[in-house]
Image (cartoon, helix red, strand yellow):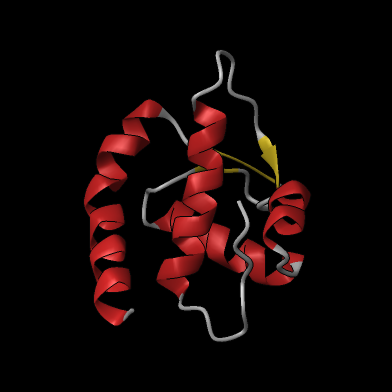
Length: 97
């Protein structure tokens, strides 16, 4: 992926990075639950911060995750729901740069 979280990265950008990882997993023939430790390692973010973002993403309906935010998954149904959120994040990102 090549991008890493920074202390000043907005919540929207963190959610986008996580969404991209989960979206890549969803494209597999048999998508698996993605361990939070794997996401944290790939994005170079501490597990505590990641779990807060995952909880937020679950509460807004973007992803599915277990109550402890140990495993996450995105489904085809969630892709359609999240489309407007992703579009907004991308527009905000492009306007800020």
